[in-house]
Length: 522
Image (cartoon, rainbow, N blue to C red; front, side, top):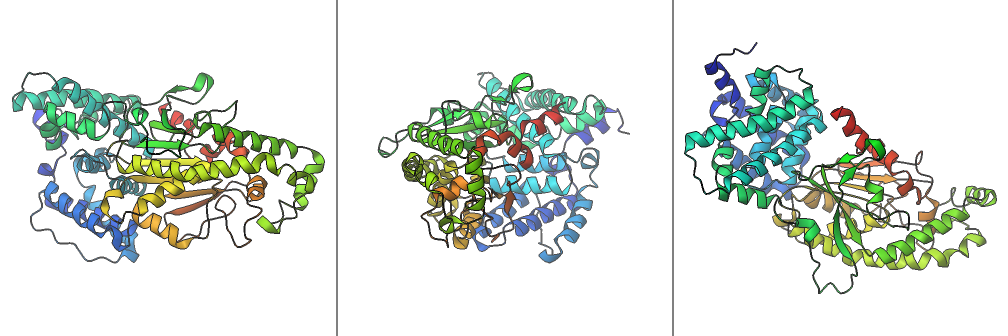
């Protein structure tokens, strides 16, 4: 039981480097460096890891830290050892979410949230067997806290340090405390909530950074909390080979009676990219059930050409609904690979309906990907992690965007992209050098390739390609990195046209469906 005496409560409320004992501090640093070595084994991220180490030593106020010897092959053994020592701290025992939250405060203290820090924190959450959606609520409330202080610190009134600390405590307790009450249904006693809500209050970062108009404004601007950000982005007029390129915010999640408003701001952002559209399905429609981060956008790109391609996909898919066509496909397309397939003449005659729109949109994806790379490199979405998700030709846009970012071999383009999810991707599956480069330098988290071996439309579109060509939308990408995952959707997806129709089921399979979030809320 926590005591109700003010002195005891105050001691337990503040979780800051000042009231962590030396052993806990050392093991926080140990566990972070161990995990970063496990995630990023190549030399490309050595500078980042060294900077992370130096900054955390300063933040924890450790004077004589020495990295302990460990064998990365025995990762689990060392992780458990360090974790058990960290969890001896009273506040971490009461609420283990406070440990990753402590790391979050450290990660965003200078108004920048590196995707590699986000991956580290995500790993810690996973290893502690905590719920990542609940922690995301903590992240979202951190944004509320920043906005709260930014709004009120714009006043010309100056606060003395003691008054500012009291002000911060009231704000943090009301915002974070409300979150915890909502998540626990009132099952956690008030003293316990005091520890959780006060985890940030004891942080010098909140007092010194958010406690001034300039500080709160700088942090808010760094996370794109001011202005239109992505939705207000204007494409460079020199990009003359692009007709349409803009961002649309996804405002609701779910459908019907189970729909609700998305969060307006988040410490991470998701960008979805459609591979085609139709008269019944615009750019946003496929992503209605997407729940990857609270704040999400869709890229509107080359709508005229994507609509033409969508009509072609629909036309060819309708042809395949006939019984005779189904039997023919079973004997040919569903059994063969690419150019080895003996395509039926009736289907080949329909090629003109889909081939030209496909070729045009395929070509347009390259300059669009280049423009997207510029948006990401310029941090238009703010200094925070970006998740990318796409189907069909939208994957081709991501493919070119990452390739463009990888062309700049320095730290500036790293730590932007966290996770990448590709579905039915018309990109190479057997380019080991390419994916090694992606995972070492650009993609901080996971690369998830969702494929369907029965996608005969994608096979048909590649019918003139060499038999040696491997397509990611049809088969696994070689796991040149342990952060590459392959998901076989053949039991869900029957053909390329199913990626829109079956999207809610696909997202649920991946764990990115709105219903996953609703269950936590309820």
